[in-house]
Length: 396
Image (cartoon, rainbow, N blue to C red; front, side, top):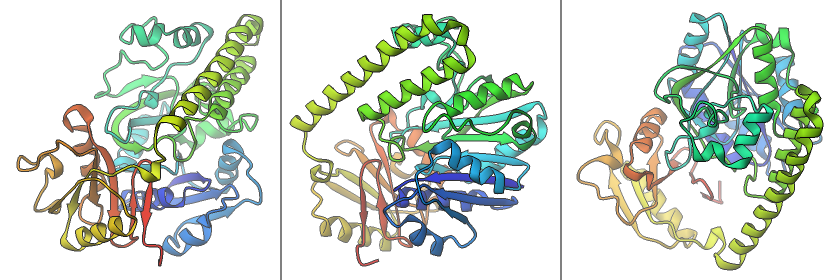
């Protein structure tokens, strides 16, 4: 059995889509899904428990943090494998089965991560990482890793010298998608609850390695909106992230504490101040997200197209549109079909009732120049999900 564990905080529409993708990916597998809600104020549990009766919802009376919430569900779960999954993700129909098959065939594997895509189809570098040892952390903070990404010496933080099309041993898996062997968890322990939001995936990955297991990267696609479950453009994120890194260094490299503390403190305040200034400039110069136009290419059946047209008009969303009637059966190449021009559009909206998630992810990654961001719509939910905005039928 596979236990899928998701921690939620105020992202019910992203979680709804995530759960639907997990439901599809669970076909042919024995899967249990547990969602821990950290005192959301958007009615997540009430809204989703009706749509997903097979899911176990754990409603906390306080926000206990990511690590503690995951541990709650791990203790209740029964699977031989445990998948820690972010709520702002989409998995392909074959993602879970391929990972389970790999774990079954490789008993030395303590955990696996996958090929994560950003909302525009680009590869998310945090899909595979090296341990942030003092030297690796220095290369990351100094810019050497970015300057020499293919160097095995300087580019180890993101292990960017590895071929993302191949299976590879890695050191750190992303907490957005981390499938773990129960046996390994029993041996090395669950997530360290001293990490409230960030760094716990690095810590656990390291302990899995120290426990005698290997961590792997699999070239299996999934989407991570990256920023909906955690506001990564905020200075609070920058501060919290670097504080987590300080905790990790103190725990595992305590003998370097004096050497590490100064650059980590400097990076903390420099990054926090930089993000603060950037956000202030954006606030002054840019319109609010709700006011931005949506130049969208919409692909789906006739019913979906009519509903999206009405929905965007209802929300007074500006921008140009091209509505293309098609399904995976009639238009298998979607927006990449020769008859469709992509110029002038920044979003492609797919009908998820008539396109497989794995197909959508494949087409998104193959988009020339990665100029389009993904959006989805289902006539079952009446919700249009983009990487920054949600449009829905408010009568639902």
